[in-house]
Length: 209
Image (cartoon, rainbow, N blue to C red; front, side, top):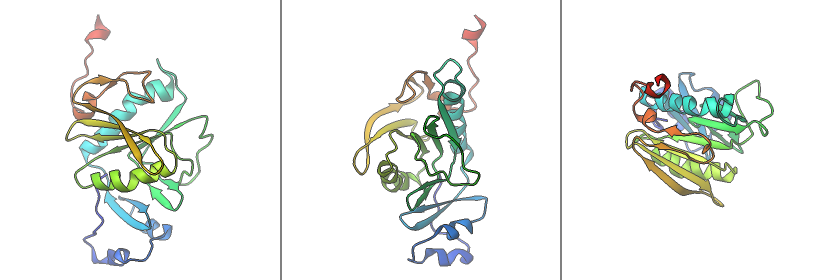
């Protein structure tokens, strides 16, 4: 998610004081922007760029059929793009999050899911990488999120993390246009090339043979 902690409009200057921001502050942010509360600081960012959004779409296309719909896969998962997570005093909006349906029995009528996800993916950009790595990862670890991915569409990498006591421990990194099986979704192959090349024609050769 592209980060802008400093807002150009002077009407937002009062957000930049050192007082601890509240959810009421977050609710004042216009709907066309994304707002988070991290360690008492209000973080405001624009909606994702097309490349960023294409990563979200590719993830849902890759994981949704086998893991949410149960098509040639185990099912049992629910994926939500940009959910508003209420984790303790923090309000975090990951790019995509997933829950095992056995844990998330219902969805709240309003924004704000308090059940920590079983899997989170953040798509990195140059302006968000430090926030995603050093501020949001410890929050996910604190809340016991067992699986975390960081996708960098510019460098064409997928990093996989597992939680430790107060942070996330890197366990694997994948590069380029490879087809991989990655925990917790190792039951199905994931085409990383679809993340970096959203306009690439789909190879239908095998289906025509």
